[in-house]
Image 1 (cartoon, helix red, strand yellow):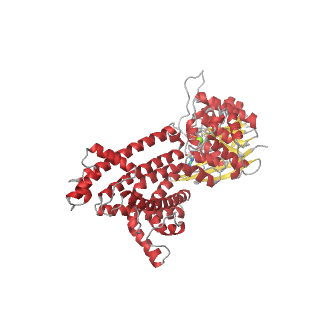
Image 2 (cartoon, chains in turn brown, yellow):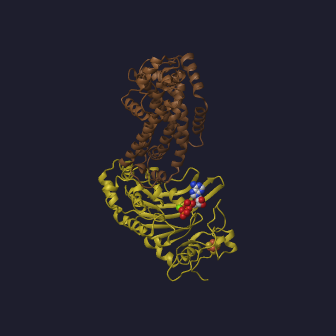
Image 3 (spheres, chains in turn yellow, cyan):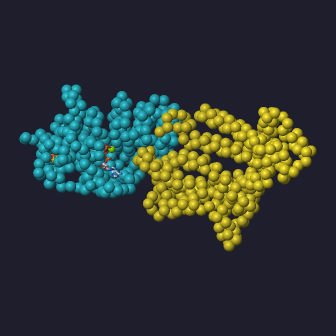
Length: 318
Length: 310
Ligand SMILES: Nc1ncnc2c1ncn2[C@@H]1O[C@H](COP(=O)(O)OP(=O)(O)OP(=O)(O)O)[C@@H](O)[C@H]1O
Ligand code: SF4
Ligand SMILES: [Mg+2]
């Protein structure tokens, strides 16, 4: 067990180091003088000199890199010329918004996706399956921004039940946070829910005809125990893989959703940074995103090994 | 009185290629503590018969006939408690993501309300698993095929069922491992008084362990007798064919029965073995033979049984 975990952690650490090199090299690979790039086009020589000194741009690249890593590790990601604030501070404000949105969206997607997937598999060739399939098709084919706008029109304007915009942290006011995030998280989560539903359904259809499910039934277990305790338990391996693979899409989806619902999150921060060529901010955002991806992948793989003992305790896969 | 009584069991499947008549009015019984072997080639309806006993067939099956355990129709709750199963593939019949202990404990909890580590270890010992205290926390993939099959048996006998149905329990195992599993099955009768319905096409196994044999062909029971009598006086040409196909030291050349088991679509007014039988006559093709005592005294379903005046 610990060997597998150790290997994955080391792999993740190596990937993270590569990511910092890419981020570091990226800004230096831009055409022209990095100092000018960092400061903006119309800067006087004094500013440029100051920037060179601040960023150590007059030193050799490896030294610059190590300095950059050292700073990044202590949370110093530089200062945004646009806002005048430290990049780390802006990210620190934006990240919790996106994390809360994403966690909520994933929770909705997992609950809806697994629930409808199981129903569709168990109630095969019956109205419940057709209903679940129709919902999945809608979830996959309707674009987020359109669905989001319709949701705002219906639930915030026509029937003002939920706020159309803004963010409240779950740690400040759970109820208000729920009200503010319900719509955006649902909009963000439906695509993933549809994918999870389809994967759950097909994994469950396989599992339900598996020998071990016949054994479970022959043992006299209740239908719920057979379906949830045996068939679903095995199908979760597939579901976790899918969620892991789809997190990238979810994060891009978050950018659109945050724009739509005016949430001051990471997506909005990224878009603003890109449109204003706020390079230190872009650098910080990319680094944090890369780190997030690596950590998420690690977590998914470790979760995987919790669910599937064949990975955890070795031996041939069946 | 017999423990299990099966009367005119008929099982049909709806499939995309049309209906399949898998079991056609099969009747047989198993007495308390008796070991009955159900034999026949692949596709004769043995597994379907076994699964039909507790309504374990897939949804496309329709079952008719009477099944009684101690005089009453077994309820779904009888599964795993009164009638328990062991299947052919120990590799796939255990759940790969649950520990051995958990899978055994589940049965105990379900039928007896509680399970304990001590009881599970006791069961693992009963089926001859070494180091049960360690095995209890292991997953199926950590065990060998023979050990997995022992776990299946431990699970099946956890609630001391009256009848254990073993569907080709040794077919998927190495020859060396098979003997050990058969020993375990044989001992169960003495240790917990379980009757055994053993499905197999290995007549060596039958001779080894069974009291009585029921032979099936194309969904019908075609002969049944005590094991010695059946081996000494096979009455139905099909049974004879099966016995002739068994390799014996004195006879190096095997005599396989030519042809294969037909898939029956509907019940027919003929002997289902007619196309493969060397004794076939016009009568066999137009009138369905009945299961009645033949020359050797035990029932066989044949118009021209062996062992009579030739
Ligand atoms: N789920 C099913 N749907 C349709 N037909 C089935 C189904 N299960 C079994 N059958 C058919 O029923 C007949 C009997 O099958 P069964 O599995 O009982 O044979 P068997 O005697 O156990 O053979 P084997 O020795 O190969 O296990 C076969 O013709 C088979 O194709
Ligand atoms: S009834 Fe006729 S065809 Fe059928 S087994 Fe007997 S002799 Fe052969
Ligand atoms: Mg079979």
